[in-house]
Every structure is written in C-alpha cells, then in structure tokens.
Image (cartoon, rainbow, N blue to C red):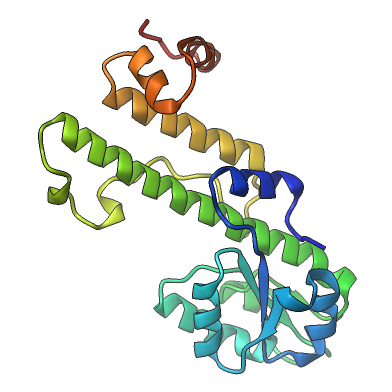
Length: 233
C-alpha cells in the first residue's frame, strides 16, 4: 500500500518526480514488521548506524525515519550536520526514557510507545507527505533558477555568470513544516502562483507568458482574473 495520498502522488508525477516512498529504521528492529505491513517489503529497510541513515536519506527523495528513542537525538544531530531535513519518529516500549516533549524539543516528530501498524500509520503518512512537499519546494527552487537563466539571457548576460547557489533567488516558500497543518491544494496553488508571477516578470506580455507556460492566452487571462492580477493582452 502507498502511504502517500492520491493527490500527493499526482502532484509529484505532474512535476516528473519519481514516486517511491521509503521508510528507514534505525535501532528499532521490533518495528520492522509493522512498518513493512504498511509499506511492503521493498519500501522499508534497516540502517545500523547514523551514517547509514544519512546515506539512505540521500538515496530516497520521499523518505521518513523510524528510530529507537535513545538514538533519535544523536541521529537528528547527524542529519542536521549534513543539512538534511527528514521526519524522525521515535519508538520506545515502556515508560523509561525521555518524554514526548523532550524528544520533540530535539527535533523528533513524535513518540510511539505502541509498536503497531495502527500507531505508526498516521505518523508515517505525515512524515512522507512532509518529505513530498519538501521535494516539491526544491523542484520549485530549481525551476526558479531556470527562469533566472532566462532573465539573464533577456538582459544579454550569459547564464554562466550566475552563481550555482540556489539561494541567489529564493521564491516565496511553500507552506510546509514538520508540525504544521498544511494543505496540499494550498501548497500546489502557492507553487503555481509564484511560477506564473515569475514568468510574467520575464515576458513582455501575457501572450508571451502564455507561450512559455504552454497554455492559451485565454486560459492565462482567466487565471489572472481569478487571482485579481492585471493581464496584458
């Protein structure tokens, strides 16, 4: 079964992003059967060390991590050191150890004390949706870089003069966050609005923008009227 919603998968596919959610387990072998019951055999794997988790996170675009509670804090520090953002779900059986609040303060998404598919499913869905939206945001930034190359061309400047640093131009951020209540439609709308606005800035008219966007002038005009933006026909 897929832990991503049909809408999320559709948006990822629409951006040409392979949809292969994966779950990494670190220091919690007792949770393996429950996770595989949710994801299937091939979509879950174990990692013995923090370094293996880091490697696994880099290898999968849409990924979440399930870790033993005592290893969650050091694991998050290792991920942060590599500038990797991923949802970490802590697993602990028994009452001893850090509280949920203490673990969340370290960056853990949540703590599970009942190792079962029913307990893990809603958290894994949240974690994988978060990863999917981060992937979309990265795609948004990369597309913005392509548009900035086009801007430089229009200005008569060679694209090679632009820095490789994606932070040179940061588009409006999408509404994502590990603890946020986000809506996929709102995230998609934010991406589309920022994309259209940027294309308009680079084009001399709405008609030219429509050509670059691959839609008719009438379609773009309807979208601009819906957003309350002036159109140039």
